[in-house]
Image (cartoon, rainbow, N blue to C red; front, side, top):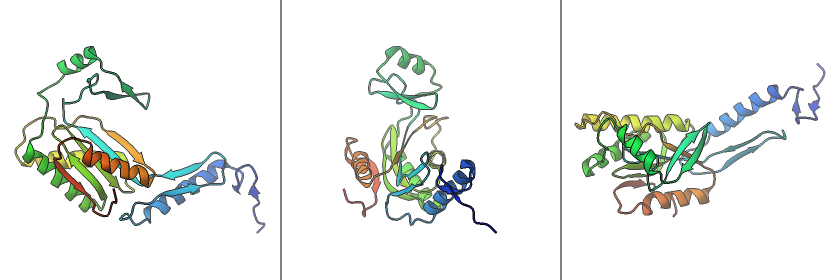
Length: 219
């Protein structure tokens, strides 16, 4: 059989960019899935194509708040998604009061026992799913988690919320809604940024509450 010549336009075999993109994406997924998750690393797959580059995150930085404690327009600042993009909102009293009137029940504030329940549920679920939990801090009105896994970040966020809510329900919590519907989901690509986020999660939140950190992380 005659050998196929590399396409000079795309730097790959064949003439169709579509035929090149799918194998490359699959190779990137396979490369990342074979990585040992116990060690934070940086993976970058630079392809020959002038229009494609795969830069894989080393961890996820996930934050979600309890119901009714951090509304849009809050004086502490807030974020809203518009057209698929996140946009920071300045303090807006009218918007805050409007969303406050829409609340279905009082805000949910976690006490010490409830924070411990959420803390244990997140650690237990990460261990069950074999996700590498790097850092965790459960506050009275929000939660920070840094997780390393090849599962989609949205799936990780949903399962952490679901299983922590389930544990709270089993402990007798009666609030209809525990967490805010959305969440802040960010990717970490560099070890230096990872250390910064771990320091932020642990030491820049005020009084230490229920937290966890992997001892192998050098701060």
